[in-house]
Length: 179
Image (cartoon, rainbow, N blue to C red; front, side, top):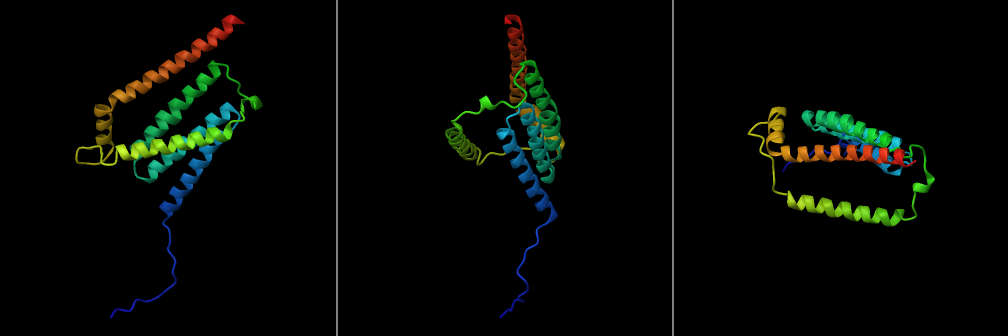
């Protein structure tokens, strides 16, 4: 019969887990700030913090390539494009009280239901799928996979962003000509 020594019952959490939890809290809090702020430019800046938190989470998961892609593409290019579009369309930059509607609670319920449905569908659809990285790990294999198998979605997204930029220019020019 084996007798186990009974010591204090505590579990220590590694520093990596603590940093990962703090990054998660920061990311969720800044994402809420994106949605709840009434200033469009502040929302874009909170989005920078949110995307940087996601990049930090990728670093904690030892996915350095994804972290740098997150920083370069999303934090760098997409946020600059978003701010450029805001400035071109002459959107109200300051605090606007009339932008807040009385349908916030139904909108939050619909958003939560949509998010739950989307997560359920994606998890169910891709439960048994994986990306073949060529038998190894590292940035070279991920890059090869992205730019061979997933080049079409990247091009579609770039065309969509270009269309959004051109649309914002057209909208801002139309306002100037009519007034």
